[in-house]
Picture (tube, rainbow, N blue to C red):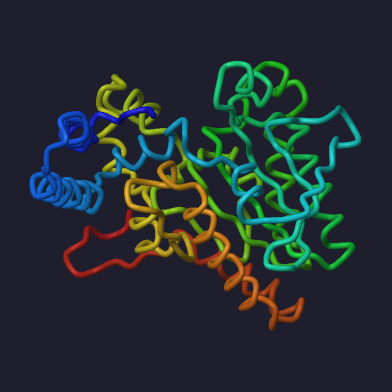
Length: 324
């Protein structure tokens, strides 16, 4: 498994523990006390590291190649997934799968970004960066959900929408902007969950929801830390500082009121236990759906409007410079 830089002390202890166990087995020596001591030290080190992650370290976890992607959550948290294809204009976009599914026995429409685990799959999925047809397909499925009165669940995991010439020619900006408007008016509950990366307009294109949630080690931002560092510090090496300043982690965004909840991950991140991460995801999503069930369409739309109107509110406190 890919080892992140800050995980080196854990890896060293795991290696030492493995050697100790191998020695005990090969030489038939009772080393249970030494093994227990080392296991305790490993547990303490792991807890200490993961309890005090910096925003940049969370970004690294969010990008981990073994992290569960959209289709992994579909496999572990949903049942009876039936994928639907095409935007009825250009074609299908495999970076944005979607279709009917069940979660906790409830029928829903689920849409999201899908990355690949190897070069071949990444090329097929375009590294999770959707083209305009992906966003138009997503909206087509949302309207289908509205027609049948089904909740919509959007799973966000993208560094951003695809910025290529073809995407620009097919009007990627308009496709995302149109989704923003139309999602605000959907007459069914919408839940969005940031699974890993939540990058810029690519994330927002399926991110207008009654409940916006994040996995514990995901990030959600208008630009990547590297992009921000390149603009402000003129060098990508300042990405850790940018991540800290941008308040892009789930705990920071919840404190700012920009998301509605954080879904806990297994110790060390979701990539260590896909099923446990999916179980926590399933539990929280079902609870949110139950809360939204009691709202009529009129109240649902009003609350959604109020939610996004509140973004960007601020207070001027004593000692602040006066407005220009």
